[in-house]
Length: 466
Image (cartoon, rainbow, N blue to C red; front, top):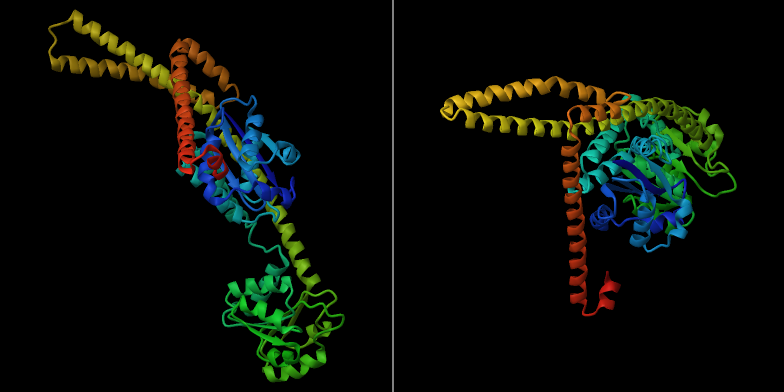
């Protein structure tokens, strides 16, 4: 069994390309089923976010795996592979496993250490489980990746420090107020950065928003998003009297608020703290405001400096997470080695049971006068002998399979107990079962298409609807 991931992300493809390969949420169950029905694919999970589309597959052979995945992408999205080949990455086995751990823990994200992707990977895995497109390999791997990511975030605190200007502004305000509950926010200008910052403030408990802008219409547009109040610049000082937080982001050439203007307002505020965030370039707020009592002024450079220090902390945490990932990869590889033991052990136990039953049949023929109780006792004792004889070899082969030359140990074990034929029979049975499952899925898809044809009235109409 081999693990492969194929995908596009924000590093390899611009948004104009990525948006062509976004799975609609309602289409994912069918996409999973069709991907699972693709040749050689035994298990699959699809992870789709605004920054990435990734197909994780477990295959029985790597031969032509990339070709089959490209063909699926081409067919599902209706985009020729020539248009996405240069943007597509393909990772196999250990590289694929490492990639999944990095994605889930936020190390492969645009904002390093973000936690949203953890939930998105978890949801993708749970959907694949519900659609029965995962098995023993991915059930173990994805659970391990999600568990490790949770532990990494908890132990390193990588996501604790904000790394956006708007989040940094909110954190600074918490140092002043402790809580934003019942705090009033005054927005000067109606820029995107101001809107993003007030969103975070509003989510943290600020309950009144006033938007002051030169154009009343734009102020009203932004104020409506927060059930706020729109106003014009001529009323700025009046609103400043009641504000706790001021966010300014205008395109003005000069200062919007001077130290003299604010000084006259401070006398009416009765020493209430005033938190001022100047996101404009050139600056809107007089730098002298920071020297006034109970005024806490931060400009874009202050905020960016905080963001940079937080990024450094996240990168230090990322180094620790990389070490955790390496340990997890080793653990997963050791677990996969033990998977090869199960068929061998099963074949050995089956062979031992057959020998035991044949021996009991021979015994009954040679000693026909034994009663039922005597036969039961003999059966139990001889079965116990068989189990005790097998116990140590089974324990030892499990241990040896997880070691460096585990494959060689398994091969020798198979030869010593002459298990080649029983194992071959098992493989033939499993292959036949997989083939039947693929044929059943293909038949189901065929019936579904025929139903659409019958419902549409003509093959052309049906295909256009499909």
